[in-house]
Length: 96
Image (cartoon, rainbow, N blue to C red):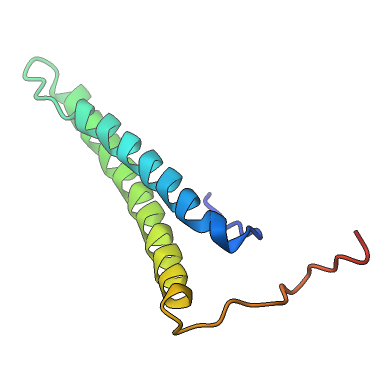
């Protein structure tokens, strides 16, 4: 089961986070590309590999969508379309 997790980071760290997430996606994609092989002597294994690849690509698609949302939000703040929030709900520095 997949769940969404959110946490607070400095706005200036967003480009580095996006870069790291992109690298993870590239590595995952390369791993799946390496599994794409014709196995004429074992079609069952090939079918199993193809199913695994499709499942991994679906997970990869969700990760790319997360990156897309991060880039969109970051870009909106950088371009001035959206203000950077001064207050983050649930974060109270006096109690920590």
